[in-house]
Length: 367
Ligand SMILES: NC(=O)c1ccc[n+]([C@@H]2O[C@H](COP(=O)([O-])OP(=O)(O)OC[C@H]3O[C@@H](n4cnc5c(N)ncnc54)[C@H](OP(=O)(O)O)[C@@H]3O)[C@@H](O)[C@H]2O)c1
Image (cartoon, rainbow, N blue to C red; front, side):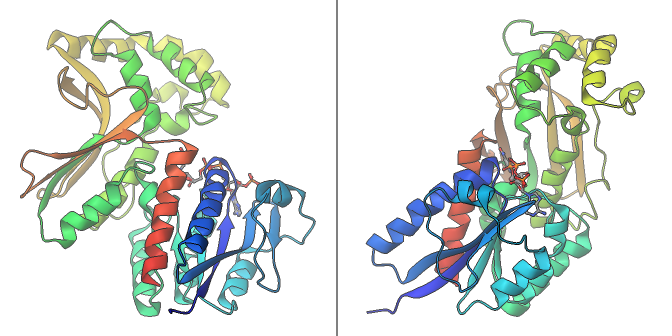
């Protein structure tokens, strides 16, 4: 019989995704135990920005009420460097799950991987920051043999990154990637410019989206297009384009110039109705051609052109016909001249965590 090997897990971040992940991790750990797997998962650390709960002797933390116990923890908060040292000293292989959106954590990935600690994360920051950080991450992983997986950094749990990697690694030639990559933008345009009916005023739709919890606390953080630009940066790099940063290609911001510097998100929403005519004009111009506007990202691999912004689509186009806050990503390749399309929920704790758990299973198979 194959001897059972311990694998130590540290989970940083216990928000919407982190909590859903901890619950899925408990299920995975139980399934591995009943399937007589050769792996035994031991969670030895969970943390959030101001709290750490960990097991100094590397004995597993019990799963029950882990996030409540973390909130109540009186243990000294460990710095990121201390967390890395703690994992590096573990008596077996260890995996860091980064469920934060922290740039500081992302910047440490090369050091984490260099110490043989694998990383699984939905955090976009490391893979969409500078191209140097991207190169350092993958060269560090190659040198140490540690693994790094980030499926949920684009399209939440949808199999976008794994599909693109498979296309590239099997020798297909990806010519174009196009889609709606933001649940917030999807929701906004599906309600502002629906394929049937007339839709509401732009400012009213933004306010509604905020009230429903679909936007960031300050909606400008969605409307500036940067989140989509980050996702495009990741996909373009995987398709072989050495994109320098998410600000190195054209990104259309939907924030009126005059409102870029207003002090708060609330003031922005208050003043946004004054600019409704700008979006209304664009909607009407598309309508005259029998089309609707959508906020999309596209990568033309052959021409090396990456861009993010508004485009017009026929009402019958799959991008126009999207519903709710769904994402859609289409890959045109040499083999898939008629595009390969992935569509579904592109946000939400459970689906995003499922992408993280799926990646963890891949790492466990490869360690
Ligand atoms: N939610 C989605 O639908 C979705 C979809 C795709 C990708 N993602 C990605 O998934 C990640 C998590 O998203 P979320 O919605 O769960 O965010 P969230 O609810 O804001 O939770 C973030 C968690 O990270 C913790 N944190 C932040 N900085 C930290 C640090 N330096 N050290 C330790 N903990 C830190 C926070 O601590 P406190 O609790 O103390 O504040 C919080 O527990 C993000 O990268 C996001 O972009 C989310």
